[in-house]
Image (cartoon, rainbow, N blue to C red):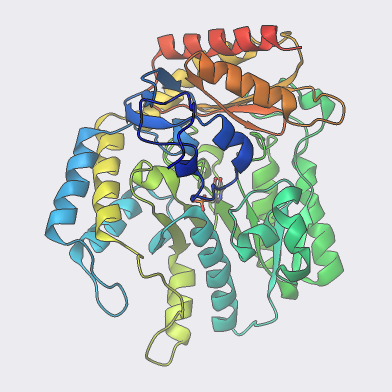
Length: 449
Ligand SMILES: Cc1ncc(COP(=O)(O)O)c(C=O)c1O
């Protein structure tokens, strides 16, 4: 086998060893030339294969809300694996998934009483879109097939998710084969007066009125559902303007359109409440979650649905299977065990309240970077933040990538999308960690040309 001068030569991994895996959302060749590999994680920190400690400013990929390798979760997974490693979920089951659904129901916003398990956010999104269509068929309105997403939205990578999503790069190679009846609302970002808003920006609620235009254009009787992230995460942390989500809800109600909140990032305390729906006081008809559902420890996603939707689909079936959809691993025992242990930590440590209480400190810390080189906007809500940099001419993303790499070398994990640095730390973060994040990031910004 080829030997190389990889920086982590202490490991039995060579450059050739990195070839077999085709990495997701990664510049494979560039990454494999200078790999950054994690070896372990605990609490707020990763340790990379060279033994460097890295402060986790992003909760992995927005998912490890309770911090890494929490003992009760580790134990629950091990116990489940040794007790019931797997049980089919079609016309069969195991108690843990029902127990988990009941526990989840205790914290979901009021009307969302039924829970369908998937294995990722992408699957949850495609499931929610199918539930919406199944609902309208059950209600005798089969022409309601149009979905309305939003520009810059991210709803995973399934064909349903990229159809309603609005991130151009994720769609462009597949445009000819996307779902046929999809429209997009405008993104909520770009109003100059909103730049550097603390929390929700004040202008832009009327952007929701674009839904009325789509109703006028296509007819309400053709529109099944609107899907939005309450706070758009992956596109660079876009916080909804005051009144925007309320207005979307009102317009949906006026025309009988279902509202789907994709809470894959905002769910489980990120905004200082269990869900964004709680934070904004807007109840959707369907909600998708993943990530923090199991603290990122075992892959799992889920769709929460109202009683009205659940019972309509069940009532319409004439016996037999009501919804022809499901996954081999829906409600997997290990994921349910991890999820139950995760919910217990969230509750015992009051982590959602902790996020709420720390949010003002977080906000001040982030906005202290206003005026630093190249910073054109700072956005925040709960324990999430975005620092947008001015792009270099013709090189969108280059500056943010440099900052990301610089921070990593100095022991801080950030995320970047376009030229926005995104931050979403575990909710167990301390003020001293927040100070360190800002110090490291500030240093990287000053070194940038
Ligand atoms: C809002 C939203 N929906 C869906 C997804 C897709 O989740 P997954 O990567 O688990 O498929 C993501 C992932 O970041 C997301 O942020």
